[in-house]
Image (cartoon, rainbow, N blue to C red; front, side, top):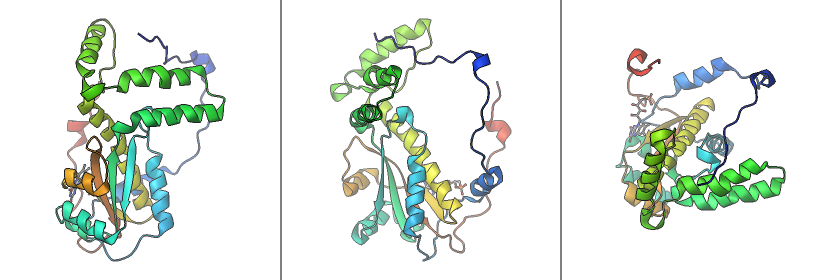
Length: 257
Ligand SMILES: Cc1cc2nc3c(=O)[nH]c(=O)nc-3n(C[C@H](O)[C@H](O)[C@H](O)COP(=O)(O)O)c2cc1C
């Protein structure tokens, strides 16, 4: 098996803290607190530059191995948009929206993106050997599922035997595991996007109430892609926010060890 020591930190004395960029925490919390899922939008449009900046924010989300195995489909064509509303089960959050986006996990593209990563390293010309090793040896080991996903049982056996004695990463495993892998990162892009929209004074509604099979067909993405969610966007209209925000008490959710 490949032996690459990935996680090595310098000694504590050579890790003094440095200044990170200054940010406005109040502004951030204002954005978080004012984001609500909006079900009725007004007829106001979203300027293209706002859309572009929000898409850019989405693409800056943290993502697994930086393989960016996602796509964002902005459905602007009137016919397709109407059909997408239908496939979102006619939800008002979709039918009243000015803009509709579908966030798609593309675990099936990991190999292509892995190569893009290596190409980028070549272009930069100053990447450490460890970075190359990660994308030449580690990612293929972690993300390969084999023909028809047949590598999964072998990987399962290997991880479980190795895992008896030492900490061993166990996911993603198999094709289904790769779906989960793709959705995790894509969902973070969704969160970035929705918060960015709010920061610009607009609103969103995430939607998984849709027919994913038909949505894939509409967007022309393959079966192995995963529809993480559709996100509608616009300006909130009267009655568009359903009641006060409600969350369970954090004592039930946040567990300190
Ligand atoms: C993955 C996901 C799927 C969702 N699907 C729908 C949906 O199909 N329709 C809808 O009206 N809201 C949907 N929501 C919105 C949730 O109902 C909403 O986030 C939740 O009630 C909390 O309200 P808040 O977003 O205003 O804080 C979805 C949210 C997420 C994260």
